[in-house]
Length: 312
Image 1 (cartoon, one colour):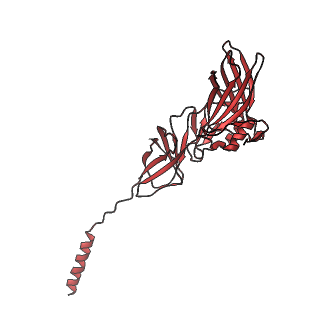
Image 2 (cartoon, helix red, strand yellow):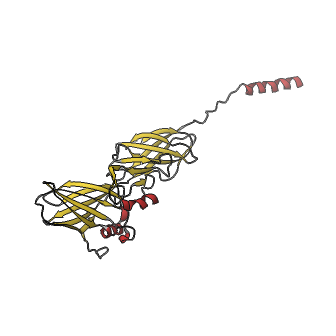
Image 3 (cartoon, rainbow, N blue to C red):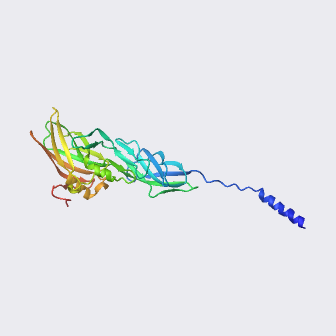
């Protein structure tokens, strides 16, 4: 009897030892799909998607389109940063870190002029977006995430109304208070960029037209003059004649820009502010002053008085 029990026990051990259970190992990488949310913006054609591990280490950079991207990542926690490529007059710096990744306006060839002013070129449209929270990539399941896109570049419209156009061929000018750079993750200027802005300017040029001559200036942003307590914003305007003559005048933008910031600040990305400037030319002098301003496509005209704030 003992011998039979022993044989039965050995048979059971033999049976279980020959049965193999195969376990699928967790993959080294997991599929990740990013879908940009453009809202009312026009999607860009080329995009760069950067995945920054929160634990540290280099970012994974993936080229994609305005429709999104697909890639694989090791399991872990990431911060996502997306921005459009193919931009003009913009350089990208600090891309090794999510917190320092920035867009910089490219300086002009003649970088500085009298007074130590730095001149930067007008940037093309720049978009950037992030995921609502940290991106968690699990060990098994693929992940889909949305990135809310926003426009970082701003536009300021300047309309010049000339009382007398005779002999005037073109106008050009520049104004200061321009942000030289922005953080891609927030769209905000760093304290260093804000400190530099009063000495950073952008130039414009336009041929004079029979009606108002309008220029749209693209910017990474403007610093609020705060009524002149932060800095004085000055537009230097130059009229040029066909025979080579030139006349200059300075336009104080300090108070009108302060009013525009009070009305909506830098949130006015799609609602482009427009400043109307009256220009008077005589044979011996040129003068110019802000006449009114509007904001957005449906906003009413706000007539500007140098001593006033917002007008009702």
